[in-house]
Image 1: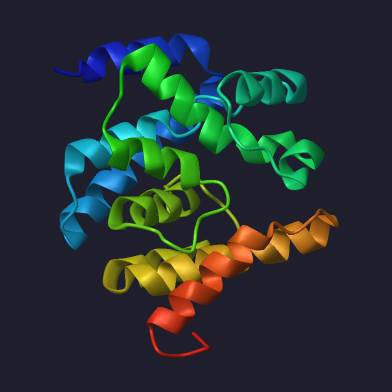
Image 2: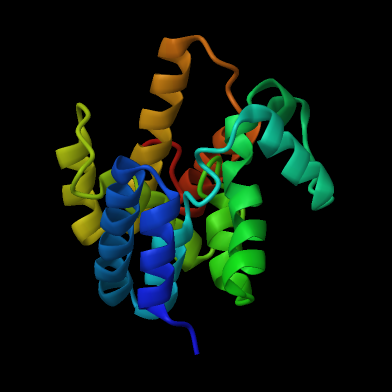
Length: 193
C-alpha cells in the first residue's frame, strides 16, 4: 500500500517550495482529468505528485543518474540534460518510493517530451503539468477549456505551446515532441487542430 502522506511529506522537505506547490497542483489536476476521462485517480495522483522529483538536479547529476540507470541518452539529452528529468524521475520514483506500476512510471518518464505512443495516463499527466492552477502563460485558459471536453486537443495545444516556447528561447527542438504531436493529429484524422 502506497502511503500518500509519506510521499507528500518527503517531497515537501526535498523540493523547493514552488516546485512542491506545482507538483500538488499537477496531482490535483491529474485526478480531475482521470475522473473525467476514465483513468485511475490514484495512479494519476501518484504520477502528478512525483513527476518533477528529478527536476531540480544539476545537469551533471541528471546525466550521471541517467547513465547509472542505463537510460538511453540522445544527443538532445546531452545538450539539454533538463529534458532527462522525466526518465530520471521515473527511476527515482521507483527507487525512493517503490513505485512499480508501469503506467505511472511511463507517464512520469514521458512528461517532458511526450511520445508517439501515449497512453491515457501519459496524456493526462502531460496536460495536467501544463494547466495546473499555478501555471500562468498566454493561452493557458484556452488549453484548460479544451481539457474539459477534448483531452487530445488540449494535448496538441500543450505541444504547440512547448514548441513555440522552445523556438522563442532558441533551444533545440526535440524531434520526439514533433512526432508525438503529429501522431495525435494523424490519429484524429486531421492535420490541423
